[in-house]
Image (tube, rainbow, N blue to C red; front, top):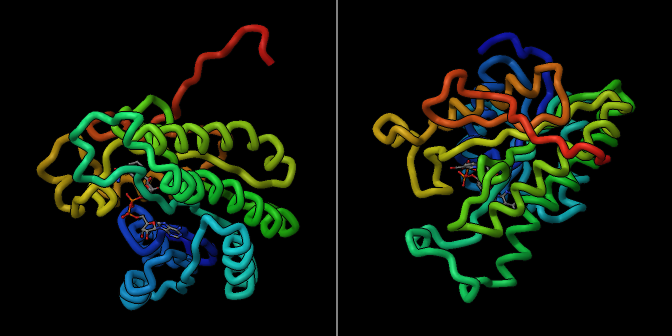
Length: 254
Ligand SMILES: NC(=O)c1ccc[n+]([C@@H]2O[C@H](COP(=O)([O-])OP(=O)(O)OC[C@H]3O[C@@H](n4cnc5c(N)ncnc54)[C@H](O)[C@@H]3O)[C@@H](O)[C@H]2O)c1
C-alpha cells in the first residue's frame, strides 16, 4: 500500500491486533495517525515503531470519544478517516469450548461489552461526523464481525452487539451521507490476534484464521472506497477475501 500522504486518521483499539496493523499500514504509506486504546504500554511500543500519535482513551465513555476526535483535529488540522475498532469478548477464552448457558450471563460484563462494542461505535460515529462534516466529509469504518451477520453461539452478547454495529451502520448511513461522511462495517471471521489468544503467525498454520494484516488491508480499502452503509465480510479462504454482504429485503417494509 502506498500514497496515503496527507491522510489523517484515528484508529481505536490501535494498540493491538487488527487496529495496530491498520496503524502500521497507514503510517508506512504516509498518513498521520492517532492510535487510541486503554493499553498505554502497547500504544507506546506502537508509537516507537510507527511514529503514530497516541491517546489513552476508554472508548465506552462518550466524552472519551469527543476528546479523542478533538485531539486528532487539533494535532492534524482536520480528520479524514476514523476506524472504530476497539473490542472485547463477553466470555473468558478458556471457557469458550463449553457451550454457553444462560447461567453464565454476567450482567456487569454485559454493560462493559455493550459499551465497548456498540455504544463506542455510536458515540464515535457522532463525534467523528461532527468533526468531519464541516470540512467536507470523511469516512468511518466500524469493525463488526462475521458474528454480526450470523449468530455465534459461544458468545451471544458479543454476537448481538456486533449485529447492532451492522444495524447502526446500515441505518445511519443515509443521514451521514448528507454530511459527506461515509460509514461501513467490516465483518471479519476469525483473526489471529490476542483477542482470541493467537499471535499473528497462527494464520500461517490454521486455515480458518486471517492474519490481522489482511483485515487491515480490507479496512483501509473500504475506508477509501466510494460505498456507504455496507457490511463487508472478510473470511479466510474466500476469493475475493472481502465481499459486500447481501441482505434479504422484506417486501412492503419500509
Ligand atoms: N480476532 C478476531 O477473531 C476478530 C474477528 C472479528 C472481529 N474482531 C473485532 O476486531 C476488533 C479488533 O480486535 P482484535 O482481534 O484486533 O483484538 P485485540 O484484543 O488484539 O485488540 C483490541 C484492542 O481494543 C482495546 N480496547 C478494549 N477495550 C477498550 C476500551 N474500552 N477503550 C479503548 N480500547 C479498548 C484493547 O486494549 C486492544 O488493544 C474488535 O472490534 C473485535 O471484536 C476480531
